[in-house]
Image (cartoon, rainbow, N blue to C red; front, side, top):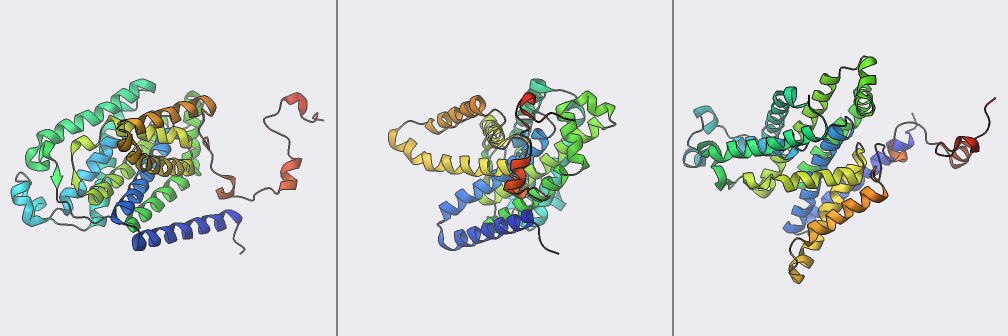
Length: 352
């Protein structure tokens, strides 16, 4: 069977990503690899947030909370057992002797975040708009307070130091591929169509038989699972965790990336996450050289305002690039024969 054009395009992108990671792991410095790692982790975060928020129309800002939970769970599971006794004395015996590898710890961290999302989602997802945004912001504050006060389990505000560095660019690329594949398949399935129907008109979707509560909770928990995964990768890339790392600024940055990439566009989310992460690192030396601390945040805020004024739907809207979408791509001649859907009705051929 002859491969279709979108399959060839995906294969080319996958080969390019593998070559980029191989080049980075071989020739780039540790700092440069860390920057690329941050870009990949943010891409996982924004893809999952674009799936849960963009497709369903939810306005959740609680992604850093799920990321924090997944990171702490995975870090405790992989922490050297011979150091847990004096650093985390309140751990139960079975957990104090456990020392897992990265993959199972990452999956358990993601599952813990998804479980928390299911528990929290039942009451919180009844809210809409800015009420939901405020409620999910509260998740970040609640979890930070809990971690700060659980000294024997998490070392509180001191944070966990000396976490084994297990995350490599290969791990990040692999989880990014899994995140994109799962969200892409769900988006282009009946689940994705149900989520889009809820976003466009919730009452009409209910009249068509869509289970609104179930669909919202599914999207919310899927997004939380991958946020937990990214938290685990984050912890084992930085080798330390503090509750202060997951703050309102991070929630704001994630929303900025979703808005610029296009709410509901998975490819747009990746491009926005990588671009803004690299831009922040490129501008950081300039910020330090001129002594204008906060310049990076100002530039990103101006970029957000410009996007909202000039292209409110983001660069890709809710769609994906045509060449990556399933189905045949119309040729230039065929496209020229199609009526312009955005043109006024008077300019279209009269229907017989």
